[in-house]
Structures are given as C-alpha cells and as structure tokens.
Image 1 (cartoon, helix red, strand yellow):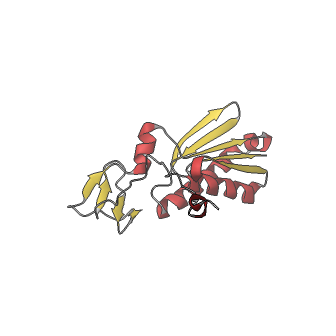
Image 2 (cartoon, rainbow, N blue to C red):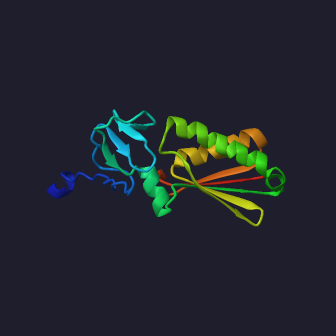
Image 3 (tube, rainbow, N blue to C red):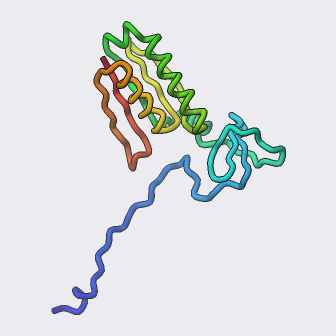
Length: 160
C-alpha cells in the first residue's frame, strides 16, 4: 500500500461566513449608536441609557437601513390580506415593537404597497420570521420561508 494514501487526512474546510454587518472583533464596552441611541454593553445591544464616556459608532441595524440592504423580506398578499390590511399591518407592527424592545437590531426598515400586496423589509431574520409566524397563528393562510446564504437572509411569504 502506498504510504501517502495511508497518511492522508481528508477534512472538510468550512468557508467563513461573510456578513458585512457583523464585526469580527468585539466592540469596546460601552458603545452607543449615533443614529438610534442603542447601547452595546456586556456583549449585546440594549436600549439602556448610555454613559457619557461611551464610544460612538453606527450600529448594524442603522447601517442596513441607510444602505437599504435588508436581512429579511416579508411578502403579504391575497384577498383576505387586501380586505383586512389595516388589522394585519397592526399585528406586523406590534410584533416588531415586541421584538425591537428585546433585540434592538431587529427592526422594520420599510413597508411598500404594490398592487394589493405589501412588502416589509427588516434589519434581521428573526423579526421577519416572527412576523410570518404571528400572521400564520392569527389568520392561518399559506406561509413559507426561504433562507439565503448561510441563514443570513430570509424571505417570508404569507397570503390568504
């Protein structure tokens, strides 16, 4: 038997996840967002009051908003949606409010109407998925998810 073949150590090489909005290094503690006022402390973003000596940057959610690069897209449509649009959009905004209170990086970026359908873009994948789940629980309908590269983006479709 060939000596090279017996010493061979095959291994899978994982590609590095590339997310332009995720830092490779930790931020200095404390750091405050100059746009929204969110505070990064003890390894996470919060809505606590920032101290005067806090470092200043633009948080990932505000960067996504300014660069118009959503992590989540929620498509809403169908006859039921058209007839109950106001009630459904109230639920969407309530879900965002609850999520944003706990996780400042999870927000709605923009809501766009188009021929009876609505597209909601979000700064995070979690809030988009939670919006879809809440709509499915409250109003039933057809719900589907499609994750993008390495779960860094999501498309949620709901209709009824």
